[in-house]
Image 1 (cartoon, helix red, strand yellow):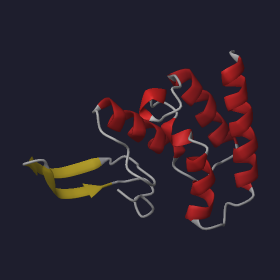
Image 2: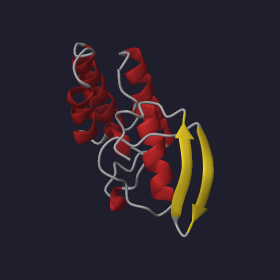
Image 3: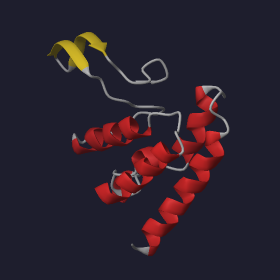
Length: 126
């Protein structure tokens, strides 16, 4: 394990442990420290404003999120940010998550339809 990965794991363990005591706090109060620490951008290259981590780093961090029963959609946010970056787009502000079902069409770059099965969809900004 590299020194960087050790520091990442220690930071995640410490922060997720602290957040475990705030499970009943409003979502924004629990999500802000996670976002500020840059965990959702774990797989986004540094050149694009992310952490520049690898999948093994994401696995280690997400394992700790599960261990601490983190009440936040970190896994979804990490994968969504990675997908957005791979598409050449800039990540929007706030929580970005994934949709399980999409019905509709894209016309002229605009989506019209319905999206359902969105983990933490009520909290997502985009």
